[in-house]
Image (cartoon, rainbow, N blue to C red):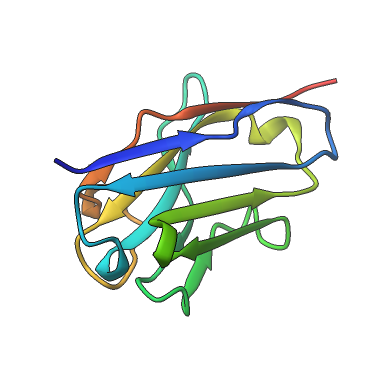
Length: 124
C-alpha cells in the first residue's frame, strides 16, 4: 500500500521560510515522479512544483518561481519543498503527490497517490 506522509507545515510570518517533507512508502520511489500541490479555502487545488524520478528536471508554477525549491533524496524515499520569502497568498493546505511514471506533470489528475496534506499559514 502506497503511503505519503507530509510534515513541516505551520504558521510563519510574511517573508519567512518553511521546509515541507514528504516521506513515501509502498512503491518504487526512485522510479516515481513527485509533485506538490496546494489548495486554499474556496479555491481549486493548484500545481506548485514537481520533480522527475532522478531529480534532474523540475518545474514550478509562476507564482512560486525563485522562492520555492523542490528536491528529493531517493535513498530516503523523501521529497522536500523549501519555501522562502513566503507571502500571505501562499496560505493553503499543501499536498504531496506521487506519479507512477518517471516524468512529472503539472496536472493533478495524472498523479496516482496523495498525502493527507499539511497546513501552511502565512500571517503576521
